[in-house]
Length: 153
Image (cartoon, rainbow, N blue to C red):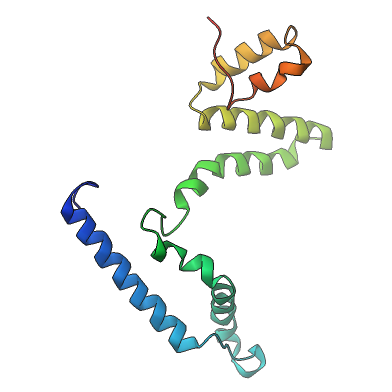
């Protein structure tokens, strides 16, 4: 069981994990020495791991950045899970019947997902925005974007 964020146990656990990861990362760097054999010298089954290692080495500074700052997560899965509906919705819009219909559907999907990401009820947000759109001055259209929108009572 992991301790709560503010406790000394959590801090000790966090230091232990970062220290362990730093050791593993240093061992991986020392093992590869930043050098990967050319794909011509490897059997076909080794080419995919080689590409993965080369990819990692090319992004080494970003890969180990979390070791320097304990506030940084080791991955960005949380963000990827939050934006996945937007990406899937846009992909589905490819099959909307025409290019313009797909673009419109993608815009609406992006607006709905942006409203969700900003903590708004999409129906309430879209209803209010569509009601206000005809009377909103063009110079103040930004107020209707999900990250700036305030519900009018």
